[in-house]
Picture (cartoon, rainbow, N blue to C red):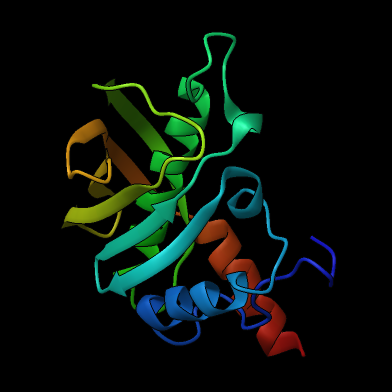
Length: 166
């Protein structure tokens, strides 16, 4: 990632995950960081183990049928799972998705506003289970996912090594 699109320069393993997520949310207001800008995602609320995003998918993420492509929906759900996992970590830890099971309930339309939520159900040293959902402006469930994520210890160790070498 280039300096122009870098979100946070604080290394992993420093501070709490919740503090890091709040910094990401603040930085995204002026950043061109993908996948957020491409998808139309914005972090609107973050608590330890729980994250809410506003999602306004544009026409660039539609399938040939004129509705939001399921792959983009899965990406939004995966992103909220990862950010929710980070928000509950101490110290701030990156995560990798092990599995993501998506249930599509209603089609999503371009230029509508949706809420994407991620909630940690169980966290352990090796695996974090998350429930994610997309709801429409009326609060109706459109999609949901269960995610299983694991800490990215390799990236965490590399960040910690780099900070001690500096």
